[in-house]
Amino acid sequence: MTSTSRAQFSSKFGFIMAAAGSAVGLGNIWGFPTQAASNGGAVFLFVYIAMVCLLAFPMLVAELTIGRYGQSDPIGSIKAIWPKGKKGAVLLGLAAMLTASFILSFYAIVAGWLVGAFAGSAFEIVGLQKTAEWVNSFGLTRNLLLMVIFMLTTMHVVKNGVHDGIERWSTRLMPVLFLLFFVLIIYIFTQNGAMQGLEMYLVPNFAHFSPELFVSAMGQAFFSLSLGCGTIMVYGSYLSKDINIPKTAAQVAAIDTVVAIGAGLLILPAMFVAKEHGVQIFSEAGELLSSDTLVFTVLPAMFDTMGETGLVVSLIFFLLMVIAALTSSISMLEVPVASAIEAFKCKRTTAVLSIGGLITLIAAIIVFNFGALFGLVIKVTTVYGQPILGLFLALLVGWVWNRNKLLEEIKQGYPELETSLFWKIWPVYVRVVCPIFMLLVFFA
Ligand code: PFF
View (spheres, rainbow, N blue to C red):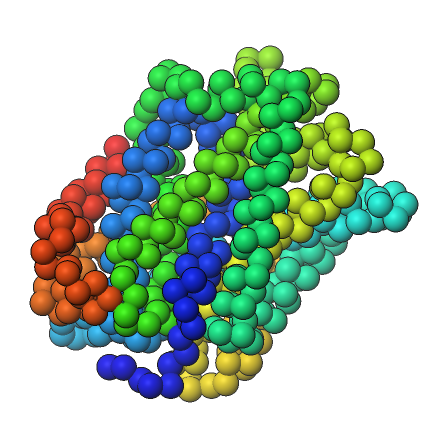
C-alpha cells in the first residue's frame, strides 16, 4: 500500500500548520461570526462548540486515518478500505472531489473580494481613490478579475507541491495571522460600543434555540474543519506514520475553534463599534442587515475609526484574510489535483493547470450568474454535500473497515492506544453516535 515516493509533511508542526491552514479560513472569520450574529450569539457559540467536540473532531480523526492508511488520493484511500466491488468507493471519492472543487469555485469569488479590500486599502494609501472605490464595489469585471487573481495564486502554490508549496506557505503565514488577529481583538475592546457586542456574543438568547440552529452549527463545524470533501484525507495521506493522529487532530480542531471564537470576539464588538459611528447594522425590526457582507461593511467602518493608521491596519488585516483563504483554497485544489496525478499519472503542473483552469471557469460561470448560482452552490456543497459525505465516511469507518486494521493504523503513532480512553469510546462513537447524530440533525 505504501509507496516510498509519496510526498510527506516534513514535521508535525508543518502538518499542524497546513491542516490548521486548511481549517482556518473564511469559514472562521466570515462564516462563524455572521452565523453567531444572526443566530442569537452565545446560543450559536455553545451549540457550535458542542458540534465540534461531538461530531467534527471524531470525524477529523476518521478522515485523517483513512488518508494515512490509504496513502493515496481520496478515491484510492477509500478504495483501500472498501471491501468488495470498488465502484462505490470510486463514487464516494468522486463525490468528495467534486464537492471540494465546487467549494473552491465559490470560495475563490469571496476570497477575490478580500483581495479587492486589500488592494483597495493599498490604492487609498497611495492616493488612488477612484481605483480603490472600483476595486471595492460589487461588479462583474471586478469580481471576475479578483477571482482569477486568487485562483492563479492558489494554483501557483499547489504547483510547488506538498513540501515546498503547501507546507512552506502555511508554516510561514499562519503564525502571522494569529498575531495580527490578537492585536486587533485587543484594539477593538478599547472602542466605544464593543461591550454591547461582547454581551450579544456571550449572553445566550434562548429564543434562537431551534432545530435549524443545530443544522447550521453542524454545517458550520464541518465546513470549518474542512470535512467531508477529501481535503483532510489527502493531507492525512502525506502524514508520517509516527504521528499521533487523535492528539494532532485535537490540536488542529482546537486551533480552528479558538480562531473562530476569536473572530467572534472581533467581529461582534466591531459591529457595535461601527454602529456607534453611524453604520446601520440592524433593521428596524432588529434583524441583522446584509449578513453575508457583514465583514465587508463592519470591518472597514471599524478601520475608519482609526484615522490614518486605519488604512495600514486595514491593509494588513485584509492581507491576512487573503492568506487565511489561500491556505484553505490550496487544500481544496490539492484534492482533485492529487486524484488526477494518481489517475492519469500526469505531472503535477499539468494537473494543476488543467483542473485549476476548469475550476476558474466554473467560478466565472458563477460570477456571470451570481444571483442564481452563488447561494445555490454554497448550499448544495456545504449544507448537503459535506455532511452527507461525512455520514458515509462515518459508516465506512464504523461498520465496514476491519477493526484490527484501524487499530494498527492509529497505533503506529500512538503505541498505548489499546489501553487508552480514546479507543474505548471513539470506535463505537463513530459507528453509532456520529451517524445517528448526523441523521437526526439532518432530518430535524
Ligand atoms: N475550512 C475552511 C474555512 O473554514 O474557511 C473551508 C474549507 C477548506 C472547506 C477546505 C472545505 C475544504 F475542503
